[in-house]
Image (cartoon, rainbow, N blue to C red; front, side, top):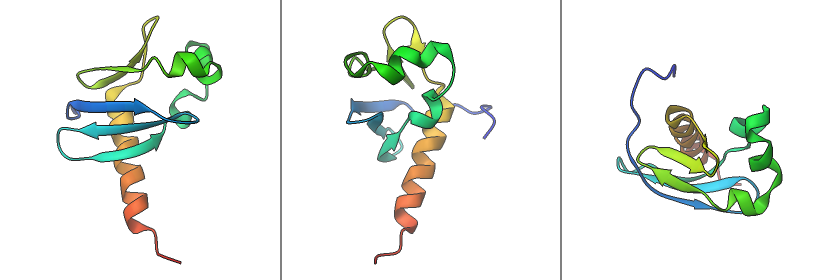
Length: 95
């Protein structure tokens, strides 16, 4: 998507191991996502990539994953990643 829509409100976000976050949206999308692709570049995300304690300070502000020092992720990017992750999980063929 191109960011020209407003994603649903985030109801819950829980940091997990690595750079994974369990997220739940008001529209029912609920999945654990790996946010590494969203934070793997740029100096603004350096502390988020390298400091586990900092990563654990995650909170939500309506539609946005936030951390101290004004670090946040674009809501539509996180929602697109959540939908993509959920679809991938649903399409997995059992071994």
